[in-house]
Amino acid sequence: MSKNLIQFIIEEQRAIPSASGDFTGLLSDIVSACKQIAHDVNKGALIGVLGSAGSENVQGETQKKLDVITNEVFLKANEWGGHLAAMASEEMDDIYHIPARYPKGKYLLTFDPLDGSSNIDVNISVGTIFSILRCKDGVTNPTAEDFLQPGTKQVCAGYALYGPATMMVLTTGHGVNGFTLDRDVGDFFLTHPNMVIPEDTAEFAINVSNQRFWEAPVQRYVDECLKGKTPGGREKNFNMRWVASMVAEVHRILTRGGIFMYPLDTKEPGKGGKLRLLYEANPMSFIVEQAGGMSTTGRERIMDLKPTGLHQRVPVILGSKNEVERVTGYHKGL
Ligand code: AHM
Ligand code: MG
Image 1: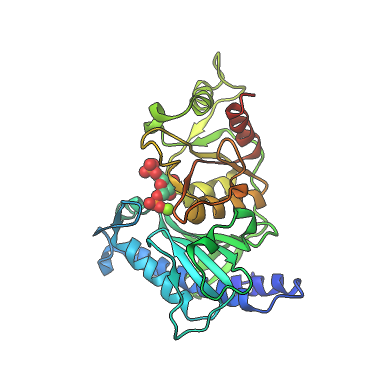
Image 2: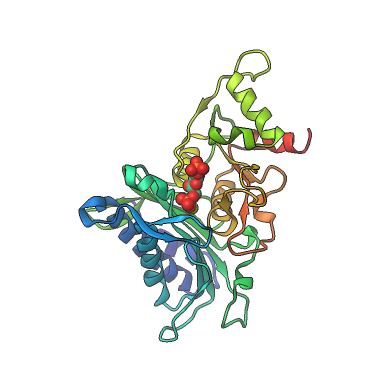
């Protein structure tokens, strides 16, 4: 039988002499949260969790019932363990302080509890994305400022994908590993060791309905993909996918390669992109880079950005190295 996720992490941590077990404890709480969310997503209409919550989040997006429920699940599963100094979520205006009745720890957790939630009512894959940062030494009462660390500082990043099978994919900076939930046993088991993204691909993912709002480099890249092996196109024909669930897109790219783009656009000027740096772009960039892929805004490496706000949005272009390099080159006028 293959290793379960916690066994895998404990064995990985043993190689780090300074590891105290705190990190393993935190990950175990995150795993519990994802199992609970997998249950709720899977039961769907049977337990009355579909549909709108009738509220808006800080970004002005209408929240689904499951956005609110899964956010609560994540907070409750992670507040008590003594591993965290604070949390921040896509669904909350401000950071979440650990209640006084619980001990505090040295890590910070950011998460998007239910990414792709527009898909939930139509029974298409959704996911959870998380990122773990270290809290600065000596800081016992973190503020939002303490979360504004570049992606290169992440200790761990991962996602849970609630698809036909529920999976967890994560990195601690030593490659990327995927685990599948065995519902009968109630545990995630290592099924996808050392996931690697092929450098080349003939598959791209972008929401083409935004085409008129894109910048010239993305217009050029997509136009060439669409032309394929005809004049003005490429050396090969391309296929296209758009699930509108970033976790599902990144998982496909980790499995068979591809490029995913949510580029800068002028649809809502000043927004700076659609996806959030701390909850989506940074964790996914860490995973993609650890699997041999590349992730940029078109202009810079995402993980090098110094965040300026908790809910900051950025353009995202990630996936198979050679294609991301090409689009990034187009932005640089190459
Ligand atoms: P969400 O966190 O509110 O679900 O938004 C993020 C999602 C991504 O998963 C997905 O790539 C994108 O939004 C889809 O956007 P669009 O509906 O514009 O195609
Ligand atoms: Mg999201």
